[in-house]
Length: 312
Image 1 (cartoon, helix red, strand yellow):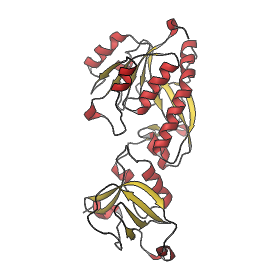
Image 2 (tube, rainbow, N blue to C red; image 1 turned 90 degrees about the vertical axis):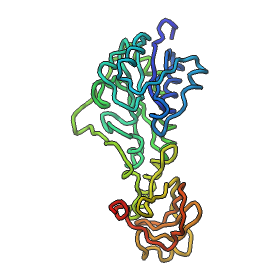
Image 3 (spheres, rainbow, N blue to C red; image 1 turned 45 degrees about the vertical axis):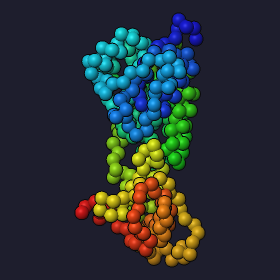
Image 4 (cartoon, rainbow, N blue to C red; image 1 turned 30 degrees about the vertical axis):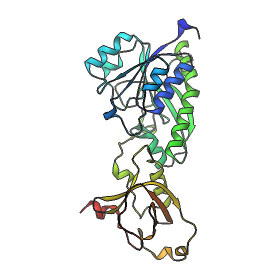
């Protein structure tokens, strides 16, 4: 790719994936003119520092709390880039989408139009979907509804952090094809909007990462694995306004208590250590490693479903 044909980009986002895409664009022959991120106090949990990446590559770095503001648009428009690549965690206005010479490219880690919406990697993990695509599309006024540019398949692992790495690898594989398509004028593919082939995932909240001892072990394990650090962790309620932050979960296969575990109630705590408890779930005994401080011994206690504590 000659220097005269290098497409120019501004890259938006807050995460490791954002920086990987910026790097992949550069490695594929694109020219990243600037990075845009949120102020530190507004960044999501999985955000990373952009300063060293930008300084080492002599790329401009800007912070905006509201990219749709007149000030942000007036600042970015004079850069006159060919494209903006966005992993921005908020919706972009139609006025902002007109800032680049051509269009804004979005990405989403599902086989669009399936799985539009919020928290896709979390949903893929908890729903036990093992294969997906990193979809790139021309952003419009909808949510993940624009015309498809390219889709790169990748595998979904047990841990969300491992899946994130696979998604990053998929981006490095995809961007040479994307830039070639942009330069050669390959037409984008219009998404099929028929309801039979599309759905929207809702925003997740703490209820989605709250464990219930009546759950199957498989569901509990997937919930924990979907919210390990840098996310804030799944919850196990042990009292009113009191919960353990769960960092790791595994099935227990050894111990004398396993001879009679099936006669214990869901939520029965067999053992309590300084950093983990052993507790009965629906179809297994699980060891839950926690981050929180626990000021009492739960061994022999019978934990209730979370609604018991949340409704008091």
